[in-house]
Amino acid sequence: MKYVNNILMVVTLLFVAGLTGCTTDAPADLPKASLNGVTINKYVAVGNSLAAGYQSSGLYKSAQKYSYPKLIADQLTAAGAGVGTFEQPYWSDPGNPDPKTGKAARYVIISLADPSNPVIGPKGETPTATSPENAATLARPYDNLGLPGAPLAGFMDTVGTYQGGFGAAIIRGAGGLPKSQFRAVKALQPQLVTFWLGNNDVLGYATTGGTSPAAPTPLATFTFLYNQALDTLKKSVANVKIIVGTIPNVTTIPFFTTIGPKVGAKLAAAGGLALYYQKKGESGVASGTTKFTNPSGDPLICLTGSPYAGLIGTATGKFYKDNGFPALPAGIDTTKPFGVHPQNPWPNALTLDSAEIAIAGQAVSDFNNAIKTVAAAQGAAVVDFNAIFTDINANGKLISGVKYTSAYITGGLFSLDGVHPTNRGAGVLANEIIKVMNAKFGTNVTSVDVSSLPALEIPLGKYMTSDKMLPYIAPHSWDSFLKLWQN
Image (cartoon, rainbow, N blue to C red; front, side):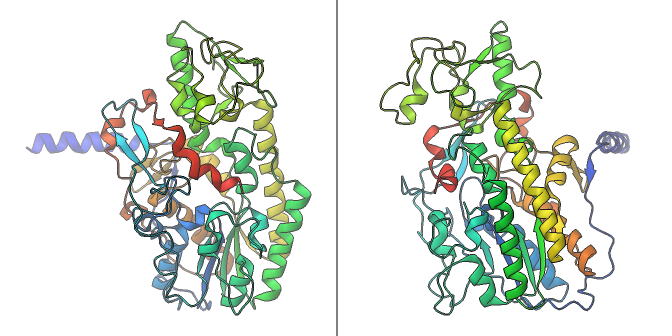
């Protein structure tokens, strides 16, 4: 037994030693948790689905209670803040309904019969509620104002143009005022605000393959709106401390990095065939081809393409049937082998080609420069989520001896929709915000114990061959998810 224990110890040490090169995130060795004289009696989170606790394509309580704002509120309370109950608009499990089907929108693992081809999507469960469980009893705005689908313009929106399907439930009027995120913050008069908006000003363009909307928000509009948001916050909320976040590049999240390598492997196994794909603006015969020999120069395939990846090489028009095309686009011939013939190519809506990647990347860079400039002028602290996500994508993150990555499912940080964080991913976001808050405002708020948060409820042992894993997410499963950006 002693010999076995020694062997296990050696293996463990070798395993930990092998995780070099990745970012580490151990609990900070801070003095006893304290606000260090800083007054925080109210904390409000302004944001979108990332703040709301949206996970695996839905809002549901068992995930929402680990939203990064709620985790921050808990750590503030532990440090002596008088924030009281941090109110969130909880949707009782199994979560919010898909407006198209009426069934719970949340993704789960439906089948693991083939571990290399897991079936993922809504389970067909009937929601227990169509609105937040505390909507009728809470007589004030929520503290978590995370609004799924909200672009930057949604912050000052009082008529619902940019509030999407969740606006009426989450953005509550105060004092007879029209509903808006800004007026809710003003009514609550917090000492601390986390403000993370702007992701959706580029993400909607990217997740639809550059088709809907057809372009990110113009930079001049974004800059004006960001300056307006922070300026009105500073003028309307006395002595408010503001923490903002930059926008991660879309190429660092598994929604765009999961399917491409699997398609490349499938083509290589078929004798080195090339993928024919539609470039920006194309709807018929394709001009793009790739054998995925240069990942940095190849197109990115969206996770929405997962149900079609297994059809490559077959004569099919399934994509056009699934998406309700009244007729085939000019030049398309579905008797040709799908994906490997220019007349039946991989569709533009499921791909980001080099031109679209460049447009999204430029928007992210420009938006982040604007965020940093406005934040500096307004005295706001900045969490550089773009740098953080880029580093995790390249190196992973070591937390309590476990390496987390940006890989789909196996990485542990992203939920089943490939965009939104898991509970532990939310813990990482919370800790980055807490780190910046302590540095900027002199607090000693302790970090979240990420390893204590519930992990994604998946038997990860079945995914040890993740390099071969090709998830299948049915086309209709994306209806609710994609509506976030198609207001």
